Length: 188
Length: 176
Image 1 (cartoon, rainbow over the protein chains, first blue to last red):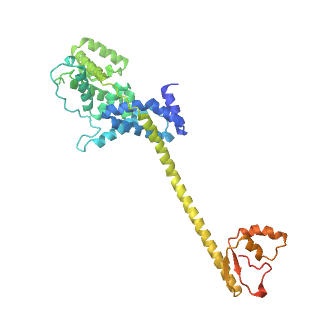
Image 2: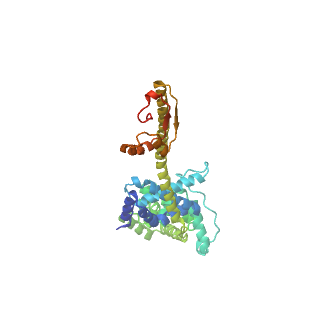
Image 3: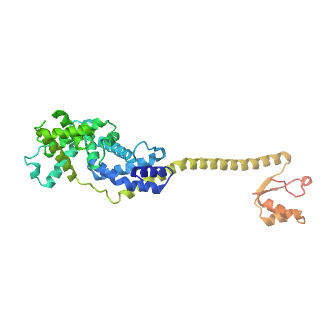
């Protein structure tokens, strides 16, 4: 049985009150949810709370769940929504809204080319670069790079078109390349 | 196919998200254009470097925390359903108890009123044990009496009535 079919079958059992089925669903997906939440918020306690909240919502929605898409897509969407809500709570009112995609100023880097840097330094640049991305671009990068999703799946989760995903990913990659130091900041 | 279009689609090309024909066109362009090739290399290296950010494993207790949270939610939902039912039950019980008390009081008053209307007698109720009941009954010999004792035991009290001599009943008591 395909993974996706198994998830749908488990949700059917959860609907009729099967606790073992729910436990299996949690076992299959809690790590994925945690990793997404952690990379997006870069905070472990928050990621734990969000993971718990995601599965509470899955449990509450079990009675009315109808498989319109893959279960994992639905799970990612719930996770993304809760992450964005958490971000809204943390950000002050004066900061740009979640939907804003304006890229921040590039960090100032020393003149050493990336190839000469220690791995730890490059890794730190990667972390800083991803954290600096606007939320909508960051979530797209995380879903594509770290969760191996397609543009179509990302578009479904973010509620936008595939072209919008293409554009976001292009801008994000450009920003990342300049932030890490692979592209000179002077390059257009 | 110009450089601007290629550079705008380099990400999709890297992620294998271009249709086959467009992918082949970009392949061909990159083989001829050093500027776009350099851009492609930079983006590829930056994208590959993201792999340096390793996965963070969730804490060991997380799965159990999730299952416990759901169990609490189930219990809470059950209590939320049970509470109104329990409240209705308690209220109903209260009403039944109230009316029983009221009913017993009214019956006592009614009997008292009836007695007062019928004859000038004083009625006092006393708690009688089995022996006293038997000693005060006149029909000790009758077989039915013993069956009646069981019935009489269910009565909370038997009023002790002082009655005028000419109206004394065969049993000596008026039923309550």
